[in-house]
Figure 1: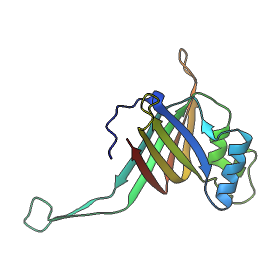
Figure 2: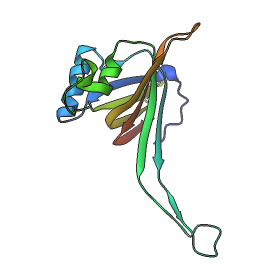
Figure 3: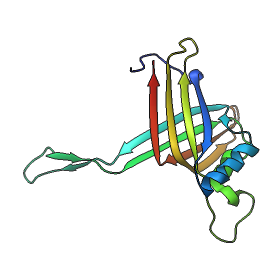
Length: 164
């Protein structure tokens, strides 16, 4: 059954979990030390999925004859009003404390975005991103607004579940 209810950002929550392997273990250390299982004070969460669709044009034809599917790209951003180094550590891993002598692993984790309207308990939307790696981190200090850190990320794959 498709979800037809209207949801807002106030209905949302974000939780982190770890991937398997050495990169997941690195993420687990950050998640545990910063109590980051549920990510708070976030805004402007965006997730995009893009497919490299390639048109095939025959000679003499203006419209494509066929559209071929290509690579899938999953990416997104999260704004967070809480600067404590946790998200930066999820980007840099071992490189957050000092410069490692050689190459090092970057943490990998999963993000679950849940939209759940408390007035309609049977209605929710769950988007789970797997194999997430942060590929950018920044923050600005505005004169008259809240300081927000901003991360961008990429994911290996995702699942979606709608109830209601």
